[in-house]
Figure 1 (tube, rainbow, N blue to C red):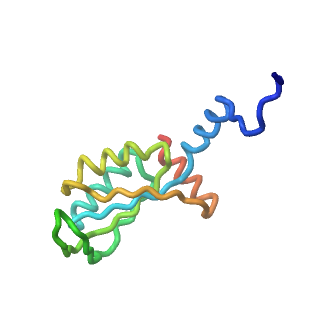
Figure 2: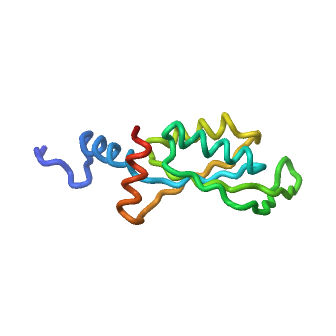
Length: 128
């Protein structure tokens, strides 16, 4: 048996280092709320708690979806949450606990690039 590790072997330290690096990676969380007031309250709460650096509350949009076997039409307010991977669980919990829907839309997307200073600002604001 050779003392040399297989080239595809990942050490525990490498996994820990990769996990730590991922924690500061910026992400975008998307959700929709039924009205502007609840969207603004959620946005304020996420930023106040340091869970998000910024939340954009967008203009109303038309949503068409199937719910409990029936096609529904609704006007909703999209929100875009800029945060980090480390904050995702807290962001998800805050949205779930302050969202009026039984099944809120919560989608996490990686941010693969952007203005470096802006991405660093997201990390700084959410690490308080």
